[in-house]
Length: 118
Image (cartoon, rainbow, N blue to C red; front, side, top):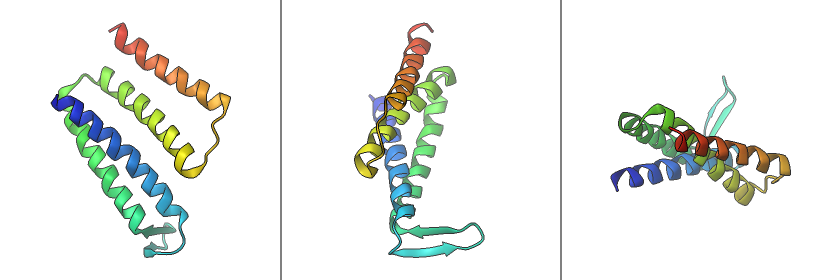
């Protein structure tokens, strides 16, 4: 049960982090910090996104200690790819094309093959 909570927390923090970072980079009002050397403007949304993404990294470190990398990496990349794909379509209106869906299907098929035929 603990691993289910860890995985769910990882997926939620990773996906929400990326969505918030993307949203924070799109808004022009509410910039609270600008770093001109790298042309980075931070809003409260992007800062929250970075906090979520750092949390996801820390959760991933815990998961690395508990699972084989040959399972963990393909599984986590596959699931987060699907969640981010859906989130991008919902929140940002990004196009869902046949090529993108086919690519995600291949990723998902790869994850299944790796985990079924251990």
